[in-house]
Image: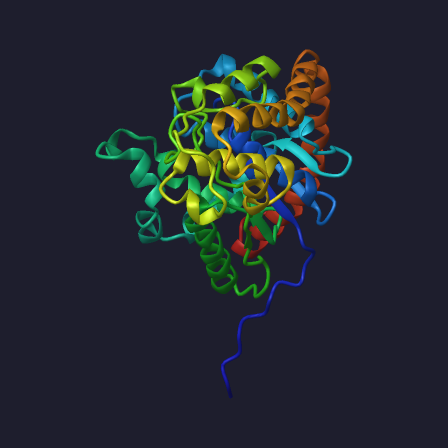
Length: 344
């Protein structure tokens, strides 16, 4: 008798991702995630949620949280997600996420969580002051993915470790409850060029919605004047643009602006440099500002329109939650049966 590999998951392909409703979404979020969600929805069944359960792992002002959820949903819609194609919903509206997370809390091992570097980075030297939720939220992430038996997850480098944890949990659950192939082992979807957009004030730091300087990022809600102003004021160096990508080494701000231009125009850095080599930023920045305004301006306008009619956003979220529960509820029901919970 020979050992056999565990049965592979044989269910449908699905992609799932979410964004926390904390702070303003910006150009980096758009190029790194949102525009890719819009493409994915036409290639594979796609579920995109607003991660409000994750948001409260750190303090959120309750009066603002609901509006922040609507803002993320508005960004999804304004950047091309179609609620008739993709399933768009608020995480907290699908209680199966939290229900499955408790089961996974009992499947995962403490040592696995101790190895999660993101908690160590966020908590620093004062981890005893952080919420238990911040420590265990990678378990909830696993539940987010696996409650829909999602097979693909768009991730950045900072989330790869958490996706590996999801795979470990899925594999251990399948083994412990003698359910080979029940949960898939989700795979990473790399985000490709344009995924890592850096600060306009510091080319060595990632563009972030938590940066205290609003000049460091282009917010999705910025109007044309604000976008152009931020590009004009973006930090640069005194040298002209080089002829080759290698010439951008040691020039983080120049590399960042070239990368933004390439991502917004759908070309490569090489093609951008072929057009602008030898020119200074006095010539390059106005062209980049015009491009950014042409791409991002309409998104901001559509977001402002949507946010002026919250009932429209709420209809999308309500419908999306109902569709999400149609997928999530059977999974949790099967899990309860496998675990041995009383069903009446």
